[in-house]
Amino acid sequence: MTIPKTNPTAATGASSREVFPLVEKKSPALRVLVVDDEALIRWSIVETLTDLGCSVVEAGDGEGALRTLTAPSKPVDVIVLDYRLPDSDNLTLLSTIRRVAPASQVIMMTAYGTPDVVNGALDLGALRVMSKPFEMREMASAVQQASAARFL
Image (cartoon, rainbow, N blue to C red; front, side, top):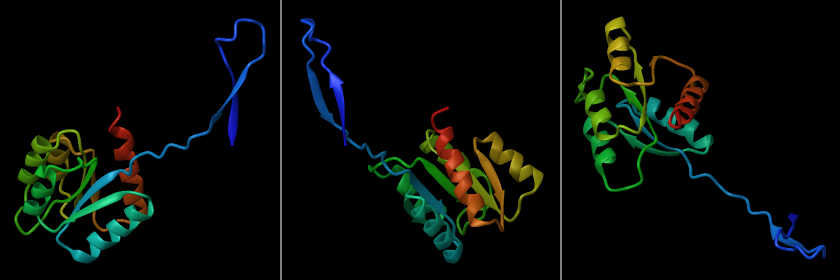
């Protein structure tokens, strides 16, 4: 499809029309890091987000997450982070992630969503805390919300 465009430099009164091809621009895929030690949960989230067009990276523990975030590669836009991991069972990892990747939005997941955990995560800059179990459509919606929040 082409869009005719009048040449603004044609001041002579002659009608000059140029045709420019319509170029479809693709936005770069949202890059998401999913951190969970439970392989089935991680797989479900990865499949859901991949179906949405996200580029997804996985980690099974905090060390793997930090390796991904500090590697000289494309930055991560959204981090989906489990509260309890084999090498982290408190908010220290979230605090470190906020320092290492301050531009990334974080969605915390937990089956241990006490008010202290939820408030602590939000105070450290998590965009949202999701209680496990959750529906995959809820996760998809949360990631889309996190994507939009990057520009606010």
